[in-house]
Amino acid sequence: MILFDPLVLLLVIAGLYMAWNIGANDLANAMGTSVGSGALSIKQVIIIAAVFEFVGAVVLGSRVTSTIAKGIVPVDSINLVDPHLVALGMLAAILAAGFWITLATFYNLPVSTTHSIVGAVLGFGLMAAYRGIIGFEDIQWGVLIKIAGSWIISPVLGAVIAYVIFSIIRYFILQRAGDPYNIEKKFVILQIMTACFIAFAHGSNDVANAVGPLYAGLHALDMAGVTIPLWVMVMGGLGMVIGLATWGYRVIETIGTRITELTPTRGFSAEFATATVVVLHSYISLPISTTHTLVGSVIGVGLAGGLAAVDLSIIWKIFLSWVVTVPVAAFTSAIIFAGLLGVGL
Amino acid sequence: MIKKDYIRSVLNIFASSPFKPLVMHANKGGDCVRKLSESLFAFCNGDMEKVEALSREIDVIEHEADVIKQTIRSELSSSIMLPVHSNDLLNFLKPQDSISDDAQEVAFWLTVRKFEAPDEIREGFRELISKTLETVEMYEVLVSTLGELLETSFSKRDVEDTLDLVVKVEEMEHQVDMIEKNLVRQIFRNEARIGAVGVYHLARLVRGIGDIADKSEHAADRLRTMIMRR
Image (cartoon, rainbow over all chains, first blue to last red; front, side, top):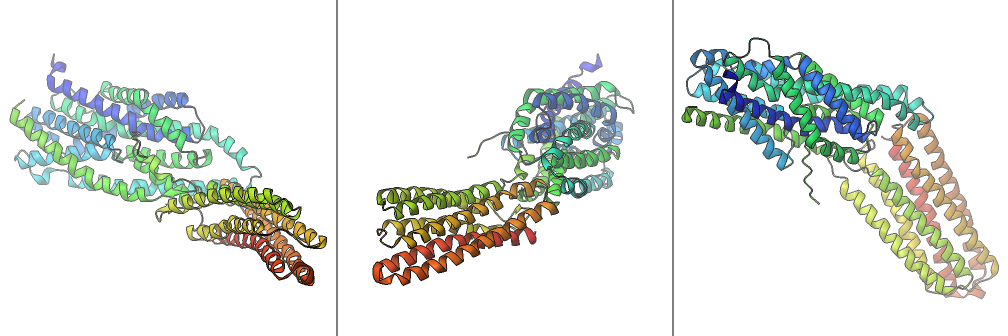
């Protein structure tokens, strides 16, 4: 049976590994803020995250997945040369991204899985062009520019929305209340809703980082049509949930115990802004980093005077990781792809 | 301490808040003055052993206050964004730190010479330290309102409540000034009985205690600036 094609199997395994990573880190980061504000217990957060992450991936995940799979590199033209090239290239991309993410996780660098996979897919495209399989001009530079632009816009937009939301809460609720602690209690319920929302948003955008390359490979080998098979999305969703359950809970725990500043009103503002921005990008098919958007949103709350102390040096670190991740992932992916071509798998 | 938690980004954005240590620091100043008040009463009763012991205790508390102050300063790098100007915060930390410094100095001056003066001066000292302690304790209340201010992110009502406390501290400091002047006059009136060295010693003590109230008032004033200029 063709499903047991070693290439497909490798893509599935690598995709699951990416999904696991995303669940263990990015998702945990996004959910940790709900624990920090005391709105939810860790168990509750994991259950909410599992359900809504999965729903988000399956319901709204296909748009960004298509962008990763077909939007950057013209896989259809490569297909005409040899369908195996696409599968190999995508395998190279996901291996490169997975490798870079593992390294970054080990050294605790603020690297985004989204930036890694986009860089890695681009690397595959560049190597294909270098080998003369496609022209350099065939790579969708326009889409890439849009993606890169969204990486700058998304944290800024998160900051603006969070600033506005918190300012409204501050002006209309906090400053008129006799007892601010009572208000915080009431916001717990709202924050449970935003926890669901953020899990949904994260699932809808980040699932693509894991299953985008897999889908491209399947599509090239004629095992998937124009629409993404449901089992692919389900697999991505499951992988992320497993990552959260096996490793991410520790990350949530750590974040939860250290972020005590983020009371329910602040947490609500930051999470709602983040989820809104991420869902918006999922809808317009652009892959962005949930974690970086969340950082932007927290800064927004800080700018509105909602936090005791915010360390802005992280902006520089994020920018640096952004600049490093894309070329490194692209280069690694290109090398792996060239290697695989040499082996002649 | 570098501990690998395998967490990227989100945690790094939360810097440690300087406001809780600020309140702790103010309370250390309060502790010093409470001990100093005890010490002055012991001094007036001629219990020099207790005065010595309390002076050492105050040394320890003053050092703890210094450590907190250094921690606050070292963690306030230029990339940290606060809801107030960090310069204003540092400007108010400085006089607040002087409260424990001045208390330490007076506590030391109490140990160097026995109290030998008429009862009315003894009574004057008790009154002076009591009012000073009251001022410092009012100042502690004032600083403790910072928590609520942050919680409501500086609601108008809370800002007004805090500013009212600043005025109270200022009024109390003024009362300390009055007591201080009277006491100095009394000391010089009794010059013949106390002797020149005694006058020098007591006048020095009066000034030292007065300085403590001055610094509380000064810090309260800076705190107001910090809140108003935010």
